[in-house]
Image (cartoon, rainbow, N blue to C red; front, side):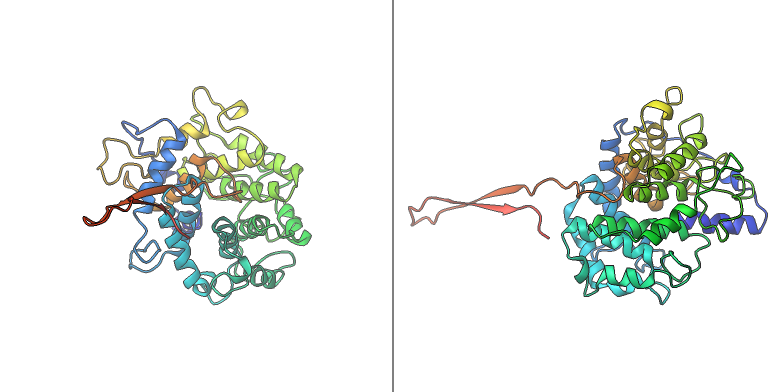
Length: 383
């Protein structure tokens, strides 16, 4: 989401039309129409992007922390490749301080993601890589604005990081500070203009001023990503009225093809579709039924169209493309796309990995022995 915001912010600065980026590289010869199978195929591709050290590298072959965190959540959601998930968690623990302090101060969104992962991996959150994650998160509350987590500029990520922080706390069963939940609720757009009602921007500096109407040409107004992640967090916090209003905004933003753009009215993208699917499920609705069905299309079928099919190179099949990848695999689209294909909102109640399988190893007897062969049960996964 932050990559998309940064890209569009740059485009707006040079007065280029955002909607020009929205060409859809429609998938030919899709691999499957089953979202669960599609999630597994995408997860296999994504796991292949994780290096031996346990992180996804960026273009400079350095750790891409955001990609790595998202990938761990994706693999846990789909239940694919437990060994790679464990390898990521080992790297995150070994580098916990660097992970949570990308700019010299604690990042509440990253801490929230680590709390969710600690819960899924069975790691004590107060001892994650030597850090007390709940205490570190609590120390960031109100350092910039009352009720807001973190002291970094919230212009683009205030709602997003706040939502991740709250969902992380909910995952470990910790109480959600009322001031933090109230801050998030106050960010929601009010009754005017009606096209913005129920939506969320990345951040509203003055909540007494009405939100601008969504405008994909100027990239202003509430967006689907901030709204979706806020709906998930507020569902966890039990704020049903805010959740209902957020879902109404998202329903109005759905395109005729079942897809979603970052700013309503713009071109669809898989990340927005995936996050909205999670929000719909968090709000107690079915993304493949009811008001979310547009003819023969739904948010799920729209998301599936981004998966590279049998006409793509074999090594690329299963990954998701995006409006920005020119038909090539996109790690950002794939890692968040899996969240939507699985259709499980955050925080995940449990990792979807199957119970540890066992393999039987027959130990051949010595040629001079009459001992019965030993059958040893070996866990398929550890950690």
